[in-house]
Length: 450
Image 1 (cartoon, rainbow, N blue to C red):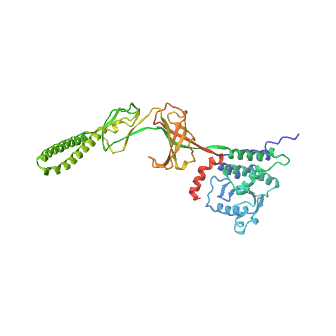
Image 2 (image 1 turned 180 degrees about the horizontal axis):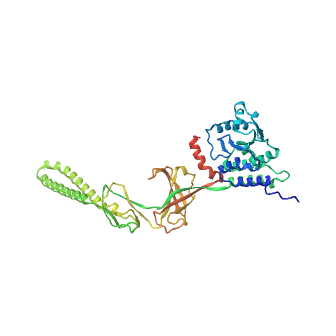
Image 3 (image 1 turned 90 degrees about the vertical axis):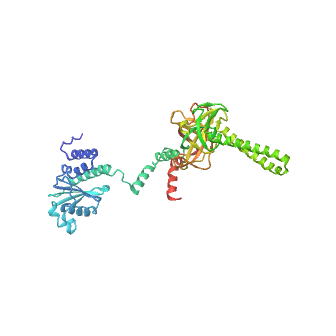
């Protein structure tokens, strides 16, 4: 059985440094360990940590590196020259450097240097001391530099990606184990699992704003231009066929009707007078036809105004619920002919109306399932079946265009008309990969113009 290592053994020191490097969460702390704590493995007088991207990162015995001082500028040139020398630890002296940097070596560094490349980290650790480097020291420091590089890459460069590394990773994952049947190959099983998930059939669904609306309401519109005078019903009140709903201000109509009736009476009196004169004088007979036409004209005008006066009192065309806004919003408001004022909807005749945005339009056939998740009760969806989808998109109050979708309820509900929510519309079955990539593909096509 081998003897235990003493507590001051270089291997124990190396293991301690490696543990600290793995546990470090600060790049500055790692850089400090490289140029200062490496002294515990092999003594040296000066150390510098340099990267190809960024230059000198840390110096031994220095808290902060000043990039513009002559020493740091000289070190940058020296490390750049040594970085091209190779990937193995290298003993360095002034003779190994180009002439401009070699001449200043004795001014800035001790005679014997050691260059430790950091590989994929893209840098090197330069150590210098007054005595030559021994093989034992170089081996310890090389192992420490490799451990330190691994910790640095994991902390500072976690997302390093190249074509070479990606190809290598894919090859490692897809490498088949020799001697095993294909159904026991882990790579093939993973590939089959991913392919099965991508090809798994799912419903193509979209979400659209929707609400509960009456399925076949009687729309009550303004019969003529006028001003609403009063309402005889309240919002959401049950009404019977023939029950008064609201009335218009009929003062002007009544006045015009009275004038028309007076004009009719005058025309009739004039006709009777001329008729009597025609019995004695034949020249008045020619005026009878004109006066008769005038009487018919006045009678038609009076009849029309009488009808308008009757229409000023609007009644319910059938039984149902009166659906309209606050009556105070309508009183005194001028309306034009054909303007919708209220609706009379039979109780229980409710369906779902959704507005499908242009970007979410998917193939929807009559009979496709639809579920309305009401804001008032999101955990109790209302199931329905698509009745039709409008061919033309119409402008919405928010300025966007959308297709109107109507869906008939699958069963009777107790929710009132007007409740809003979100409708989930289901189309045909598609692969899971298409369901995930449909919107990104559409955006890319719009962007590149395919």
